Image (cartoon, rainbow, N blue to C red; front, side, top):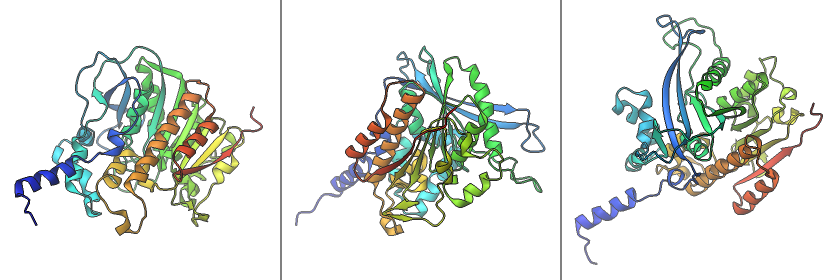
Length: 385
């Protein structure tokens, strides 16, 4: 047997690792616009967070269609990770900590961090008026937690704004009331008002995307505001009995009040192969009367994989799911995330841009093109006034 020189072996191994294609970064279908990016720290003086600072600090992250005149290099993914850390080393360590515990490859994680995004910091905005989409993250998720989807939408002519999840009060305080959901809803209402400073926003067309507990906040936001035009939820916490019980404490949490289009993607964890989880509860969807609504079962996505940050860290980082007792594969989870991005864009193109689209036909085409990735349930509107 011929011996392979050590240097060549190192080069071959390095090429394999660094030559890997980070699927949901490199293969996502981009739109016609470049993507601008800005990140701001705002203060809501109508609320307090701790006893030292008499206001609530809100981190606002915005992606927007940018002019072709921008020639600057886009951000690297590590720039997102370091947004909330003064010490960059701490940010990187936090990004890697959990994936490494589950068997992730540190070299692949480094490659993800070095990957180029679409976002160009402080890029000149494209002229025109664009629909606004608010992305509402889940508990402990940052504003960039679904950055790749936000970039995709911005490249296709949407302005996307988000803020990180923040509890009602600082964890340093003792004996404070437990307030859930409401602080995040008010954060998003604050952002809605602030975005009027962003000259290119079309406030006649506003969409919401929420993940996990953020999905609950998205629904509640739509139930109590008449300026929302479409809602998309990524495995919202109210699909399970514990999350549904929390929302039931709100008097206005009632599907009969929802009169805008509703789209809910749920994890294969809840129902697959004819089996339904004991905590699964589709009560909200079943109670909708005034809007045409959809539930899409994403067979091969775990809860965290609906947002790009955790998808990258867990699905694209070399973790062997089979060793952890799951049958998910990187190929299928990536394809599932792509499908979600395409379906959400089509959904918003229909409801926020007014394009003539047969949404059910588009879902059927996607099912045919991507077999065994998802199925869907539809509830047509009736008694709409």
